[in-house]
Length: 292
Image (cartoon, rainbow, N blue to C red; front, side, top):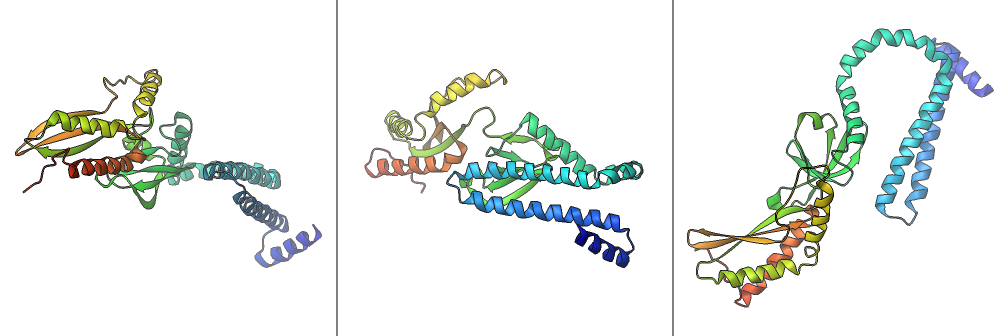
């Protein structure tokens, strides 16, 4: 402490600020530096622990919150006797600060709404203001998504992380792909010749989709999810099983295959179904339409 007193006096003589205030500033910097060192140490230690990445993420979030609270407490203890004198000054500048920081304040209260109302949660797939992706981080003023492409591109990750202010949930429509249940309807269009045996083709397509390892258990899971969701949402489905619709278009027939799938697995499932359809085409069981 004598060393700190000596340093404070020397700095005070140079900058013209009382040594007591310099000492408080130095103590604050020491505390903040100590907290940073603790964070780095704990991160390195926990990164070597054999647990899932998800557990590591949530542990790091809890650690950050705990250490931030600890930092705030230490600063209050250090500056406690000085805070009372600042109240009057703060009251004069608060109005101006409110105007200048209104977006930050708006984002902060929107963050509280997200925390308690939970319009989305970590790892949910959402779309807001034409931005679509998986939520990878939620904090006090904003949230981040790992952007995905459009439905026509299989909704795969672009690799870009997009930061979105919390306040946007009050000004833009928010789509949550997995809010009430985890599955969405996906539709594939299969074009076949006019002289195709439609009933036989449909039977083959039903067999392909109903034996898919990813899809075959989804209707039952979806039924259970709907039973739970109707307690909070006025929502229902007349049919949860895969279904095929038929339409004659010019010189061919289009079969629309609809099925429930988890949005993050949609492209994988489409790939598997198309591969099996091609196999059936090669064996002559399905007559795919060739656009001339």
